Length: 272
Image (cartoon, rainbow, N blue to C red; front, side, top):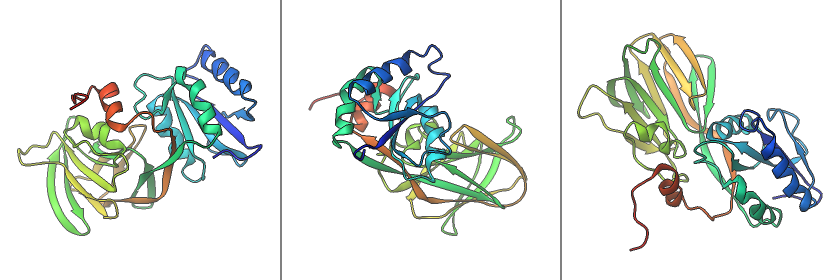
């Protein structure tokens, strides 16, 4: 995980650590273990010497960094200094006990699938989800959905979400989608407030090709709710599993459903 004399990169979202407290705290821990490290301001380039990247921020920080790292074979270890921290492996207070396990290679690299959307000549990447919505938010989208050229249905709705298992606990869940284990090999299609009582989320194989065909030329495509592109076109949106994956270092100390209970107050009682 970290080679002998390997370097650990550290990226801290400056908006989440304006006082510099988190930077000082993590530097103290890394120095105590005589780890070679350097702070990174731009994760899109210049990481050739990095064995792993520690990412400090919230869930939005992780989503942004993952998309920028997808062309590099660098795993990330996430430390929450944001609000929710659902995607984070540890809280800042837990980092000191986690670091020795990382150095000793006791963690596992968990690969999460990513998806790509193509519309005309443009290509977009997401780890959570794509959402097709009306450019004029007071209107609906009218979208036909195809899975491997098989029409799954037409949805008149506030939007259509296509999410990964990682994104199943995000916007899709709020829109009525199912809870999905993050390493499952599937994709979800979730309508948002569809104007039909029979419209339900659809789960397909991750290797399937999903085509969204808008019956209105004006729509907006958002990826991970961080970037959005307005389109005025009749081109289909083709969504497929990406050849690239997001690589997270996990220590196995926080199970998925433990995290659901802790972060999202998922109502499952512990014990028998």
